[in-house]
Length: 454
Image (cartoon, rainbow, N blue to C red; front, side, top):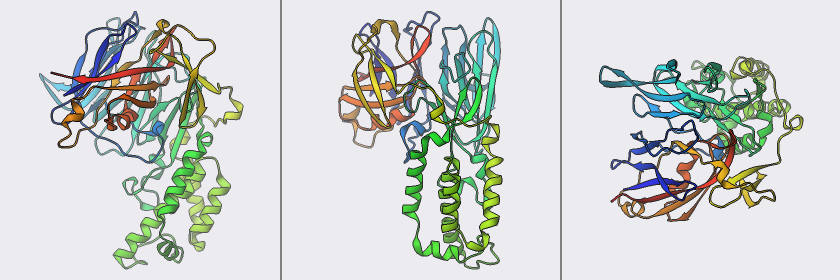
């Protein structure tokens, strides 16, 4: 068995995560003290081992669940004095299959979620655009719910609910391009679930939506991330069957059972219909309306074009974007072209040039002492289950170097020692309280160590 640990700035290793003997990972929850200094105590908690596999960039990777149907908990005290806790709901001395989230301060308490099927801490301590540090919970009220809520609470002064975003299946905050500004990646499950009588579960994906808070205003900034949508479009087009597409274009587009009598043909036509919709709304949600209508004209039955175009426009206007207060394009923003990455492995920070998913490290000309940086603290780290006969991978010493952004998400990870590549994939779902410098979240590069438990 092995345990993950981070090196603190004094060169000491501290435990973060270890896998359960039955492939149920263990999570180390580390309190965040008022003085911003590491505590030596923590909690080891078992959570379900679920490895999500997606074909989209790591910044859109869903986070691991903090509490799932009464399994898993977390406790941390932020430097403002607010304690954040997620834990199973208890009936007497026993936990039931439900989760809750609470904020405690000065003998007062605020319940952020109760009797929920799942609660995930997506962000803790960062500023989402409200001018104050916040904690953001993703809450799924019932196990079978296709949608969840994103509840944002302040962590300074008297904690309060700042905003709730609803309608997405999941949410993930990240500084996508390392520009010291955070986006919230989600989707518009609310709009498309049941659209054209197709349930969300039968779709490859709901339309991606990228949101950003600017001075407390929620903006749709999806158009700034068109390459993400282009990858989705290319993937769907590559899977379209030409013969089935031609057959679909010969129909009325509605595909009523009374008009398509063969169950096998109906199944194939519904699959093509869903794929065409996915292509069209990928253009539509990324700010390319004319491209969306051109694709619709090329792929949809001609006799049904007017109806489906009106239906798509209405669908989008009633979805998650109805909560946005405008849209924002990067040209009108003044972000950094690169982020300053503080390196706790050396005496100075380094810079990262914005190169999409590629990251280039180099020395910063105006280096700040690493001693001024408070290292990231783990919220949830999970090691994927090991295959049968892979005991040697668990018994070897391994070291990871990771870059964590101001939202506490891993942007880059590499093995410095060891050969367990599953650790790299697992980092896409890891969550941290970000590093801090002078009370503000900063990006940080640091090391995690895996060693034997004997």
